[in-house]
Amino acid sequence: MNFLAHAYLSFNDPKVLVGNFIGDFVRGNLEEQFAAEIVTGILLHREIDAFTDSHPLVKKTQELLKPNFGRYSLVITDMFFDHFLSRNWNDYDERSIQVFTSWVYEVIEANEAILPQKFLAPFTYMKRENWLAAYGTMEGIQRSFTGLSYRTTFPSNMERAPAFLRAHYAFFEGSFKQFFEELIVFSKDKLNQLRQEDDSL
Image (cartoon, rainbow, N blue to C red; front, side, top):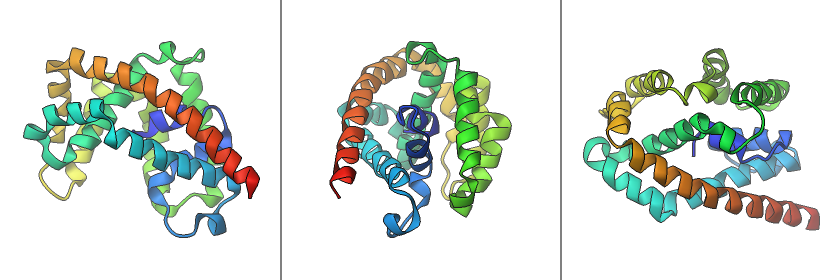
């Protein structure tokens, strides 16, 4: 999943949010680098990604994307799903998307001293352009995909992903809604499990 989903699936815990947000940017012995609650967020991030990558519905969306986007199909699926989460935000949270994203940025900034350096640059752009809310508009997701297409090692065609989304919108939205309900349940259970394991140490 992409940034907005990871933020939502931190279930309003600031430390878990920080860990969930930086999960792709950290390596090594986590316990030596971060507080226990942040480690829990990092581990939750990895569990969410593993669940997502192996899920039949996600694999089905990738099968539709692969002829056009190849190895970048999973990245595109993640961003499509963030689009639907942002667009349908009121189905999942009582706060507005703007209130939620402002809270996310404040939490991340409050923990800037411990954030990985390679995370700080993209976060600066994320906050400035409010990526988390912008994912919900076609204009915002077009900017994101166009920016990513310039940074890929191999030709990705990602700038064409929004047009592909429009052409198959109902399929991707239906896949997201069904999958995300399962992911919420999985993530809540996994977070509780990780907290119990931490308490037992």
